[in-house]
Length: 428
Image 1 (spheres, rainbow, N blue to C red):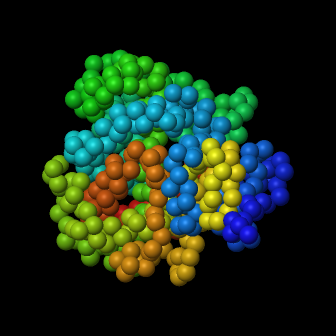
Image 2: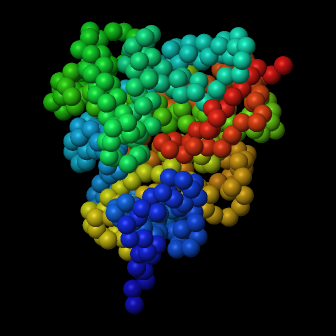
Image 3: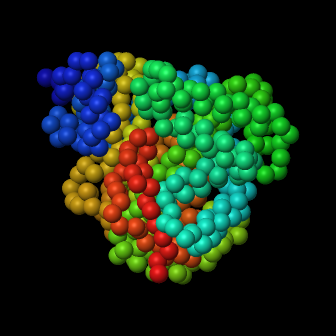
């Protein structure tokens, strides 16, 4: 008798109620895992979806890269575009990924570091001089966008602000119903996408300046036969903005939220921060706050990524039948790796935010906050650098406190962020 089991199913037919529950209930996946096990199938607006959690099921999926391909919901596919790296598979995906990855090399990060440090110092001064409480989550979003727009693309001033405005409209509809009804979020996002691509092509057609990193792409584009001002590259830069911005902004907002709501953790971290020098030199910025030199900071970042990963899950589509945790998953099924549920699945106090677990060897599960495998987020290294620099640069100078009577719960789509913006002021 085969040890493999058939795929458990929720029994949903149209998937309308499942889709509503998915967007409204942060425990959507957990409730079904508790009932059906680590691998189950449901329907989402007519699309068959297989959710998985746990190290074994995820390892089984990632061990078969040739048996799966990338996949995104229709709204994401349309808003990113057919040329986008996210919507490509096979050789075209690998070739473009190799070129775009040059923007996140160690030498590129060293080039970006002075600009990142400058933006952090400017935010510190803004918080110091503010007479009214400021929404820290919004400031983290603007910071993360400014890094990718200014230090990578070389855009600043008014051009950066208009780019940010359209990008926020575009981002908010990434995971939405892809029906362009007049006035709908998706329709507004499609219009914002046109404006964004027009601005990005204008940037590409301008002479390459020394402020950004676009010159790093020039040579590599020849090998994949992409002109420097082509629509293909415009869509890669649109994805680049999202990859280097949304995940970073979410991680920073959630990190600051946990520190401000848990003073004992902030005090624990400050013992280490007080021993670290700021600012670092460009050649030291990427390593001076690494796990060796700042183990508590590293543990804090890992716990944020475990507790509230900036990407709640990632998708693959099966090209052939697979066995995931001894469950048979048929061909042509969309599989979502449920990271939030998976990170809290196991023995111990996994529903408690406790960074010390990473110093005590108590976290055995593999953390994949930026996805995994050959499609791991390209902005991962830049995001990690920004987060470490922000924590040391901002908290080393300031002590913040939250304004009471605000909603600290997290909005989950497109990435976790405090609902009321995390209003803060300088501690008296």
